[in-house]
Amino acid sequence: MNLKQETLQKIEEVIPRYPEKRSAVLPILHLVQEDQGYISPEATEWIAGKLELKPINVWELVTFYPMLRDKPVGKKVVRVCRTLSCALQGSYRTCETLREALNCQPDDHSPDGEFTVEFAECLASCHAAPVVMVNDDLYERVDDNRARQLAGEIRNGKAGPAETA
Amino acid sequence: MAAKERRIILKNIDRPGYGNDIDSYLEHGGYEMLKRALQRKPEELRDEVKASGVRGRGGAGFPAGMKWSFLDFKSGKPIYLVCNADESEPGTFKDRQIIHKDPHQLIEGMLISAYAITAKLAFIYIRGEFPEGAGILERAIEEARGANFLGANILGSDFSCEIYVHRGAGAYICGEETGLIESIEGKRPYPRIKPPYFPAALGLYMCPTIVNNVETLCNVKHIVEMGGEAYAKIGRPGNTGTRIWCVSGHVRKPGYYEFEGGALTLGELIYDVCGGLHPDRKLKAVIPGGSSMKILRADERFRGKDREGNEYDLGLEDLVLDFDGIALSGSLSGSGGIMVMDDSTDMVEALANVSSFYAHESCGQCTPCREGSLWLKKILERMARGQARLEDVDLLKSVADQIPGRTICAFGEATAWPVQSYVSKFRDEFIAKAEQQAAGRTGGNGRSAEQVRLV
Ligand SMILES: Cc1cc2nc3c(=O)[nH]c(=O)nc-3n(C[C@H](O)[C@H](O)[C@H](O)COP(=O)(O)O)c2cc1C
Ligand code: SF4
Ligand code: FES
Image (cartoon, rainbow over all chains, first blue to last red; front, side):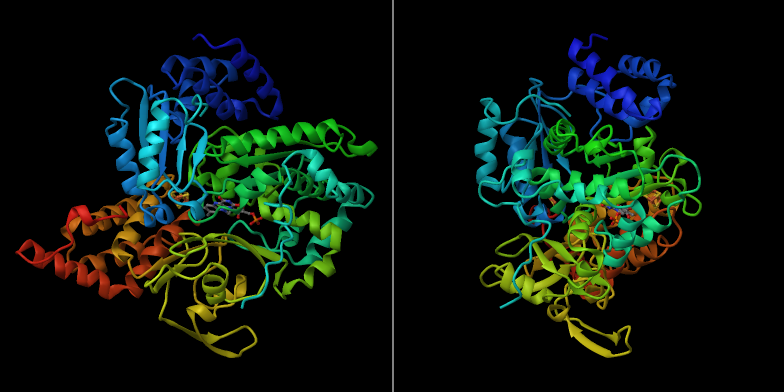
């Protein structure tokens, strides 16, 4: 486990916020994933040790929460909302276009490890459908044309800073 | 023309030049109500909230003052306040606007609420997909701390309070208040069985806890400003204050609009406020309160007797927009998420889309919900993709009917209601699909897999 100094410091800050230590597990999982890209078995044990929990108490969260990952993903994670309001405005097409343009298979990253394109459930901006997130950034009204353009921006680094899930 | 918007919660949102920093907020009278509240006794503030009649904006519409009155003040345990900023009900997007564009309004509302219920520690549970919103709230909290609106001995009073932001990680069930509490405790967000685990008695860390939605807590600030009785005069009795309606789907001007309770009808909202449908399109259906709620068909009639015993006979467009007005349709206004569908929508696909959401989000504790939601999705996707059978309509109904009332939390209803309502109201369309596809399999004209758009 080679966590950055900054991550370790944030972890120390977050624990005393809660009346019970165990509550810090989700914030710490976010911090570790931000640092490492995913949650490894080693990270799970480390977090468990830190909070005096059993590793299963940490792992059961990794397997439950869709945003926590147990394996590496692309450097840029593209999440396309597939829920009704977005689907009505063509988000399935948007997703397909992004997948093709970024050379991704469903639920997998591109062979070069750069990109992951996946579906997400309602991202709470339904009036501006279809909605897409690139890492932490929200993109609205991403119709098929905009999707082509956005794929270009993702490729040349203009869209979506580092993943901080 | 429909009534004009009355922006109370959204007053400063999207106003040119209004930023989400504390200076903008202070320039517009920010934190004055906190100062005023601290001069009063907590129980007086609770009485104001009760007198206001404000109903929760998170989904169930339970009166906030009454919920607060269930708090166990005698337990000797700490009391917690939790703001539900999970905003995950499909079709709902109002809390995001408040968080991004006016975070201090929420923080002031929370501080007043915390003081009123004597909570010294409060959490904002924000969905994981709002990383930017979480950052905005963290910054706003630091700004408020810098001005001593938050932290120890707020503005020189005896009241101390901390607010922390707690991020979820993409699970819808964390919006259910007891699942949310488990999530803050660091466990899988499995909803708790009620009774006995009503949060007001046995909530976070088994202590008395109030969970309120973002919009509800913002309202508390305005209740203090106006006084409970004056607030209660806005809107209709039982539907006091304003509500933010989130309109999405097939209208020309989707967006968020704030109106006094009962100020306009659903028809006026769709045609006058949202610019109506796209050219040459007709209204087909509306989901009035987030995708969990029963769907309404454009041409159905709603008949019955209201609470005063008056008979009514209404069409979809006549429904008055507030909790009680929408309830006359047999559906609910839930989280205020209004999803509009025009006549280009394939109802089998739309339901397959919605059911896929519930299958993905069931926490898995209760067998009827876990298994039922998956079967509904499987059957519907099969139907959408060209393998519909005539008996599917009854099969769907039979599976859906076995879920509600047999589960730990209301997600069971949320899974069943769409299926029950689509299948009964659009039965012909489900049957026609099966017939067409049967014909297609023997050489007729089914909808091909490439034409499927919503699943
Ligand atoms: C499955 C499910 C999901 C929910 N999701 C949310 C949500 O995202 N946001 C919310 O405020 N309330 C949500 N609720 C309602 C909460 O359980 C709770 O009633 C609400 O936060 C109380 O706040 P209020 O009284 O201010 O409305 C959900 C309920 C259920 C059953
Ligand atoms: S009804 Fe569904 S979501 Fe709710 S507790 Fe049971 S399995 Fe979980
Ligand atoms: S349905 Fe896509 S953001 Fe809500």
